[in-house]
Amino acid sequence: MRLLHGRPLAERLAARSRERSAALLGRGIHPALTVISVGIDSAANTYLLRLVRGGEALDITVRDVSLHRDATEQAVSAELDRASRDPAVHGVLLLTPLPGKLDEAHLVDHIAAQKDVEGVNPYNVGLAQGGRQRFVPSTAEAIVELLKFHDIPLAGADVVVVGRSTVVGRPAAALLLNEDATVTIAHKRTSDVGALTRRASIVVVAVGHAGFLTGAMISPGATVVDAGINMTPAGIAGDADADSVATVAGALSPVPGGVGTVTTALLLRNVLSAAEAQTGDG
Ligand code: NAP
Image (cartoon, rainbow, N blue to C red; front, side):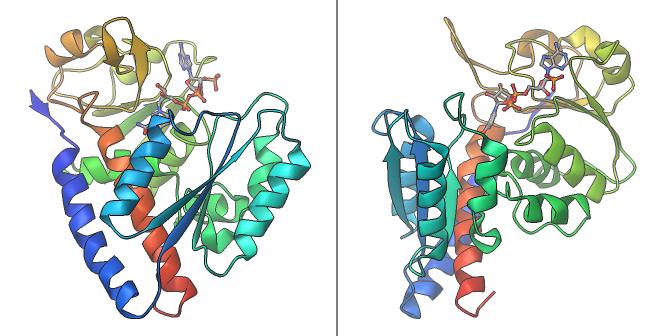
């Protein structure tokens, strides 16, 4: 069984991003991302720390705006509006999940479409659905880019995506459809997930339950892309039961070391694309 490692792809993306960042700096443009978070300990948030560290390596300024967990929807939207208007900011990211009372679906409207590097504004969601993707959620893009990097054929492939969240399942399904795969989406109300996944040549699993997808649920030689990140007493685990899946699958993305390794590199690349587009070089 082949492991679909993310690191070589992340390194390739970073190398290209370094060149693009240097070109922007050469034109006097300092690429910048503003990350707005609500109610998190920003010094302890691993995703934010990864972005800051990744940004440093690429000369991208990552500015963290942390709001108190009691911040109102108005206060959060005001910060999103401010960053969206600021000409020195090229990308705007709203960290999720948000504290319960805040409505993410309304807040994303306040991220300017051309700075929406995580592709959550309805305009960018619509472009992706229509096959004209510009910015798309980085985890979904990481799933597809990992498959392409490892030369897994997508056109005509029978793909089942388990999970339909707006950040992973739905956009991953849209991108796979854009690659001419035949895509089925499964969710909690799907009557028999295993009956679907056993017919697929590629299974993408993004449910948030450690070990959800077992070897008995896939066909021999299938490719499994595991987007899950679950904290278990034994450490980080994916949504696939790697031990049983490995005895049946032809290829599996490891957790850690697979999809999650690529997401930050893609998000930072999008900041550079946004900076280029906003400064007349896109
Ligand atoms: P989410 O918003 O909780 O969505 C989970 C999805 O899985 C929902 O659509 C849900 O169905 C479906 N689901 C849950 N239990 C199921 C079951 N028993 N059978 C079928 N479908 C089921 O989670 P998410 O944000 O998409 O995240 C999914 C996983 O990806 C998590 O492990 C998360 O940590 C990971 N993640 C990774 C990255 C990364 O960078 N690699 C980024 C984001 C998330 P319903 O819609 O019917 O409720």
